[in-house]
Amino acid sequence: MQKVESLVGRVKDLLRWIDDRFNATVLASVKFDMPPTFSYVFSNLGMATILCFAIACMTGLPLLLYYKPSPWDMAYDSIRFLTENVAFGHLLRGIHYHASNGMVLFSIIHAIYVFFKRLYKGRFDFLWITGVLLGVVTIILAFTGYTLIFNDRAVEAQNIMLGMAETVHPIMKSLLAGTGLNDRALRLYGFHIGIIPAIMLVLIGLHLPRSLRISAPMAIGVVGVLFVATGIFPAELGPKFDPQVTPEFMPPEWYFLWVFALLRTWAPVLWVGIALPGALVVIMMAIPWLDRGRRPKLTDRPEFAVIGVTSIVYWIYLTFRALIGVGPPAQQILPAEVVGVFLLILGASTFVLRLLTPWLKNKPRAKKKPSTGYLQGNLPLVILALVILAQAALLWAFSSAFIQGNTEIAALSMGFVIIGLGVAQHVYAASYPK
Image (cartoon, rainbow, N blue to C red; front, top):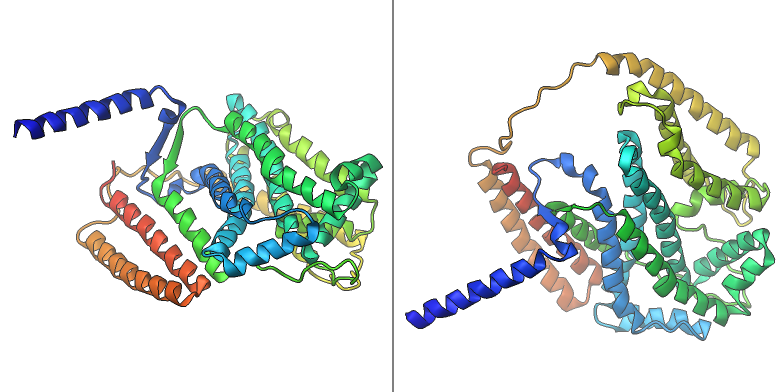
């Protein structure tokens, strides 16, 4: 008995030593949280973006073992071998692809939330600037990733990028493309796995707040959603690029469609492809100083509300408009249409917000309710029991699909299992709030 107590005492001393040393590191500022309501979702969008970046890095490391960037025609074959012959290769590639898209999506929604909540004022202006730069670097990182496949769509995207670079200066094209496809593949590969991630890590270090809180249910939910997305929308290979064949034109990824729509106006590429996006980035970085209002509510600064709503709606319009009339041959989008729709959206946003502003100003404030669980009685136990039954059925489906080699069903089942775990944690937090 004394030996057992002595062993327990030594274990406790070791744990105290580890905890004491851990508190001296930067990781001690990271706190896991289990929020009792869903209102914390939007405030955790930045965390979700960083989580997607971490998942993309973790899934990208195994992909590095099989990817062959040179010669360029081996790039497609190596990815095909990984997808079709390597265990979990299809799953890893799918999660990596959707994590990169998740980075872009969450960063966009996070920027919208920060803009409308006016969280860029005061000492947070530096976080806003680094956040804007992080968004730009995130898009470039995702772009270089899907161009490494060297299918028809990837090479078409490369050609568009090189055409835009050439309008700046021919030396820009030479720096990106090199002397041929082999050189281009190596440079894109170097940018994707080395240069851009290094820049992104530096910006993340500058952007993260001093005390970072991580919502455990949302983090688990993000991982589960990535698995589900992989099961429903698996990462496709597409046809391999052949220099001797003119490929059918394919539009770029969704986050570049708005630029593609502007390019189809046949306006100078330097203006709509380089100058306009660059000017938008500069304007976004200057927003903390352009916004001179002192009150955070949108009703007290309606001009910024109009700018925000107009930008979102117009971006959605350009994104969907780019998918219409792609061709071949691609149909021109008249500049008059692009300008006219922008003015129409601007006028409609101004009119609607002017109508809503008096009502929002006079709207009575909701009284704060005491922090009590909104799941009372036996309801939490019933929900948890249903979740456990669903988990058991999904695990059986996952094991069956895995044995049969059905990667899509296996990813879908595992995704719902992980989401169920996050739901269970949320039910517990909602039943026993802090």
